[in-house]
Image (cartoon, rainbow, N blue to C red):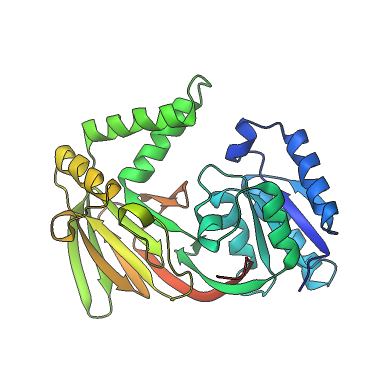
Length: 306
């Protein structure tokens, strides 16, 4: 179905806006959309305002006034809008404007603005899975432990306005190695109960590659499975070696992590609350954490798989 009328939700906090003024990018988007015959209502919003804008756009789509809702942003922006559109059948398009754009890459979306708009204009759609924990949606990954710890530290450093995102991340990484927090967690699923003392529990919406040439990428977005990766390192040096093996494509599962493929599971902890990362955003959630897959819940606009 060719796209002729859309609402485009832009998050001005996304990574591209650190290098390109919003007015310039808005003008470029409007030109690209007009070239492909797409009429657009463009909305700039972030955080809960983005969720509210998605709710409003969903009402327009359900009245038949627009063909799709498109997000101009990164994975965190996609996560918020996907939570609104799940199970509605209203197509979600993505113009990759974030820092890493994992979801867009796994969909096969071009990263260039014009090419991404061209792919959206063609209107090819398919159903993909999303996942959730305690009712909070994520499209890529969720994690407990060192990653949310690092995100909080990184954003604290960036709040001074003196550090780039990459430099703040590096400093947060070395601080994490120095303090090396570990959590006592228990994973419970049907027929399974396992305790762990781990620096990081990572939950993937579908399987994530762990070899050098497909690190972090997903070959499928529609298997209906969650993959739980529990890191084993007991100290900072072991963690550093594990990360090196992962980055250079030589992981040792027996030494580095335990893996579980499940449709849903609970994570227990003695703490009354946990920092939980959801596609790069961090929230405070209260255990037990109930993770579940929602197979085929999201309809997305994406190029036809080759």
